[in-house]
Length: 251
Image 1 (tube, rainbow, N blue to C red):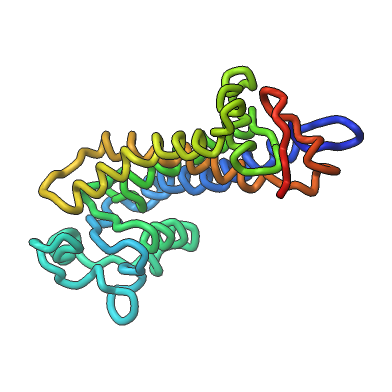
Image 2 (tube, rainbow, N blue to C red):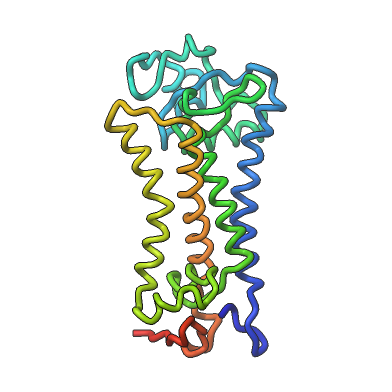
């Protein structure tokens, strides 16, 4: 079932992993909300950068792409001078700088797809906020129900009661079940995001949050299961208890 210790199964490690993932992501998510509230009003302008690159580290020189005139008709960036002026997260206090630096690197930060508090744009767009919220929930669910069952696929499915997933074990379709569940969470976000990218369709922040939440939920669940799945906590595969009395065979 879970980690074998002193002749019995326990799940302290699974609980710890789920709580760590939820705690780390949840702490950053909380900072995304708190920092705009404690910063001076209107100190963070409307932003619009690129994902996976620093755009607002400085007002000029390195990593200042976002502060340039990148064209109002471009799909990426805008003329920052008419959206509140130049911005550099390196000039903020260390905690705020970290929050906005992480957002700058990982999110496009388009102001039309982001919320603002206290007149300050949040460090992440609504989709990414939905993803992080989903990761927290997925990891917390894992911390309450997940079990180390040697492989990621068997651990992933362990949050369900054994009798509800016995059919997948009778038919040896547990990998398919895991992929299907991940697809249910990821596909709506992929459809919404790529439709925006390839057509004139523009999603809404509500849809971005919901689709992001679904993707984050399965991501937090999968990563928790992956980090928890360790064979060294068993003396052999015969100790792994699976639904439908299935046996784990190591090839």
